[in-house]
Amino acid sequence: RPVRLVSLLFIPAVAYQALAIVAGIRHFLRQIRHPSAKPTAEAPAVSVLKPLRGLDPNTYPAFVSQVRQDYPEFQILFGVGSESDPATVAVRRLQAEFPQAKIRLVVGAPDTPNGKAGALIELARHAEHPILVVNDSDIKVGPSYLAEVVAPLSDPRVGIVTCPYRARPHTLPAFWEALGIATDFMPSTLVAQLLGVREFGFGSTLAFRARDLNAIGGFAAVSDYLADDYQLARRISGLGKRAELSTYTVETALGEDSWAGIWRHQLRWARTIRASKGMGYAGLPITHAGIWAILALAFRLPEAAVLLWSLRTASALVSAGGVLRQGVAAGFCWCAAAWDLYAFSVWVTSYTGREVRWRDKTLRIDAEGRIQS
View (cartoon, helix red, strand yellow):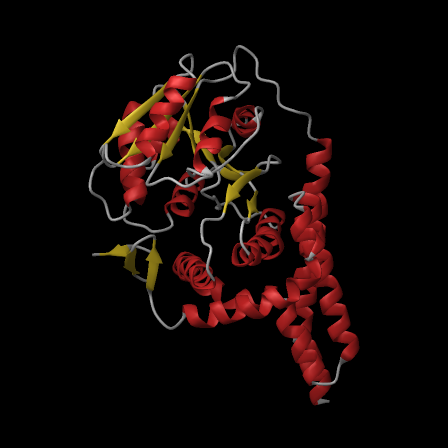
């Protein structure tokens, strides 16, 4: 009887993995059936806002990809804190190489707890167009990117569009994190969309209307929060509109090259999500089937362990190989259960404090995710 009781604990984990598989297949089919967006002359003009700080080897190719867009009317606004920022040189080079493009460098920003939000406040003042697209400095895209992410906004029920992303790892620790993004983070996003969650958004891309931004109080409304992207999506969704997960996948470069750096990065994410999601975060281990597979073995339930591992591997394969088209991560999808052990340790550690490491700063966040001075 105790064994039967324990076996009931596996049901939520099995159900979640089944949902992740269904959600992944559903999104994959959307990608296949989705016709490529072809912008017309009537397509709304777009202002791309890119807050910058520093430069790495992957940044400039990402900048170039943002300029080479098959879209009729757009401007790109780059924001730096000062002229001495190394990113300034890259933007000047971009302006010289693409003189026909509408590229502007904005220097300076208001002092805010979240420096990125401060830069966005300043960039928004110079935005000329009704549609705003925000993405991180290292996001690399194809020529159809703007057309794809702007198209869903033709539906007035859609308030904000965000994109799945695949990570480009250059070191073994970065590959480990890329595996987690492809096989853990992405499935959770797909399940959220399947279940009708209205408020989600990632730094990979946020596309929305300028009037909706003004309606929520601008970027100043999220400048105290560490998870500015989530808070922005939450507030725009609060206007009675939904978040849309695009069928377009962008690429990002993982900057961390050490195991300690990956741990700090994951812990920052975890503590930020904990503050944003509240009690919902407590149930996160249900999504980590690898933990439950080990527990099943401990209780001498090999059939349950095999089922959990098989479903976990299948959901990882659908997400990494089908949705993200990330061959390397898909090839190691059988390691997703091992990632679950790592993710569980991050989850446990996230409850031991509220400090996070962000670049060269140690920040403390309150119970709602605000950065404390």
